Image (cartoon, rainbow, N blue to C red; front, side):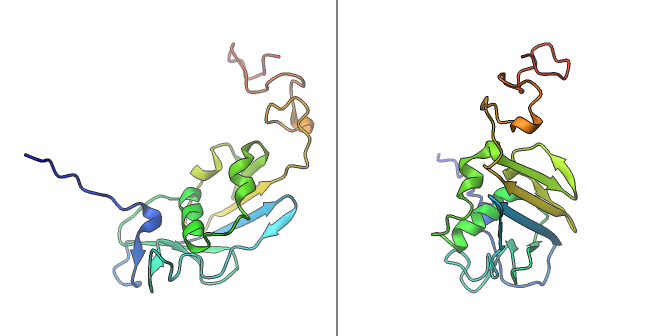
Length: 171
């Protein structure tokens, strides 16, 4: 006997054909800056794509204001990773976000004005939140520990090492 496995469609590939019967309908703002340049969030992100022909992805935009429409027939956790995947489906030749994925050490994230430490792709969008993601490779990091010199607590050593767990780098 063969066991049937149910294939689950990734959230970034799920489509909505309208606003009726939604279990989730939130809005959040996304602001991106890469090396001092504000990145405009594209109008029609996640609308009428090759994956969702004449439909909408669960996360989409209607204009370039930065407001994300987060909608679903079932509740789900909306993350930046899903936004990135929808962006890649909507604009497959775009390279504007490459610095965010290729140079994680120079990415900072704030949610509603508070610095957050998770991997930026794990940042969650909740209703009304403002997420600001900044990539800035102009800040020198002489010891290459991922902490800019101006914030470095232990220059010349890796600030992430704290073997005695006292909250201070070991160097």
